[in-house]
Image (cartoon, rainbow, N blue to C red; front, side):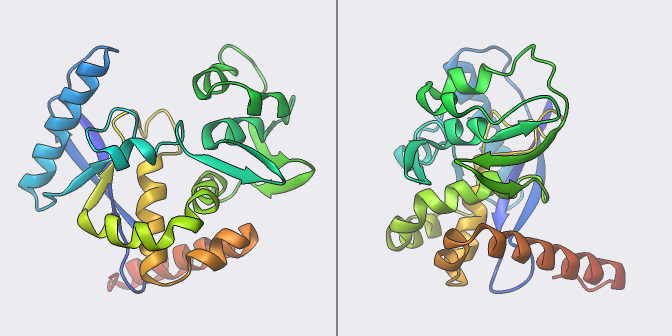
Length: 229
């Protein structure tokens, strides 16, 4: 058995997303067929608690839109350079002992992701791309924002397609080992489309970041007072 989260979009107000942990039967192994079997198990358990329409957002998805929304598939244009989201994200990392790594935009997504394996560079301090600095707190803000940049032109199409799903999963994401997941990013985008704020957030990283801070602050206050939405 294993636990993995699914991500539910926020409504007209309140938090941008909600994370729901699901226990399900895990099929071990690196083969794509094993990953897909685990996705089926995860979605079946999610349906048992009311989330019958879950979109897997990864290259392992059975849905074409789920595969197309993967960070390994989506192109993003930033500072005049176009590459896959995964490559731009990895290229932008600035560690205590190195970075950024502009050459990674010319790598394949899997090569870019594996670039840092066995490298001892310390903690990530911030992100930087073509001389522009992006702060690292909230920790997943820059990664989510790259999805916003990539998908802003497709807001009308996404507003229709994403309404077909109750929640989003990413079978490769283990919250005990990593921070970012494309499932959370897509849940946030669905929420921002509903609130008609996707354009404003995609155009300005600092605005999006400040929004996340403010929503987290308000949500935290509501939970402490006992009336979180």
